[in-house]
Amino acid sequence: MVQIRVQHFTLEARRGNVEAMMFLGDTFLREPTLNEALRWYDMAAKKNNVRACTQLALMHLDGVTDKLLPDFRQGIKWLRQAAELGDPLSMNRLGTHIILGDMKGVKPGEGLKWITQSARQGYALAQSNLGMMYEYGDGVRKNEAKGKQLFGKACDGGFHEACQYR
Image 1 (spheres, rainbow, N blue to C red):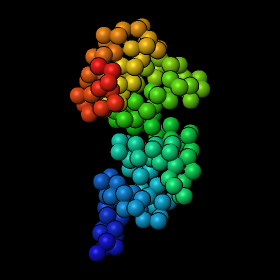
Image 2 (image 1 turned 120 degrees about the vertical axis):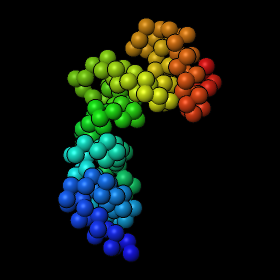
Image 3 (image 1 turned 90 degrees about the vertical axis):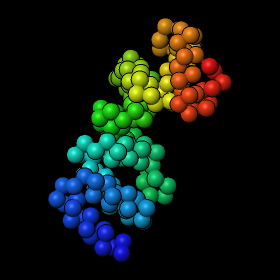
Image 4 (image 1 turned 45 degrees about the vertical axis):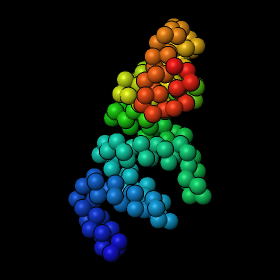
């Protein structure tokens, strides 16, 4: 049964159906055929599928246990594309890498821009990160009231670690 679905989705993916590409990527990620998963995610990402870009970014940045070693350059490439496509998780993580100095030649202000965009979209971890920056004046003018407000939003958004700072 699974093989029939894989054949059907393979035909659809070859016709350009991005959702079929994502199905195949997800299917092969669970199977021991990581290269197939990467191939399908790559095809979907090249069609600007934000979830595929994010998936590739995370796989390359973090690696896949016993299957794929981390590749920072590839991970950042896909992370930036996902951020540019509007993914708040990717915006926050890209901003964090920039601020931490992981990306040579990129000014910290660009990192702040990405984290701020993510926080505005309601991503609780970004709200907490931005709150911490305002709380301590790290990269921004210190504003404890704004920091507490952001911690409150992060807490309300489900990032419970931020609740202790409100």
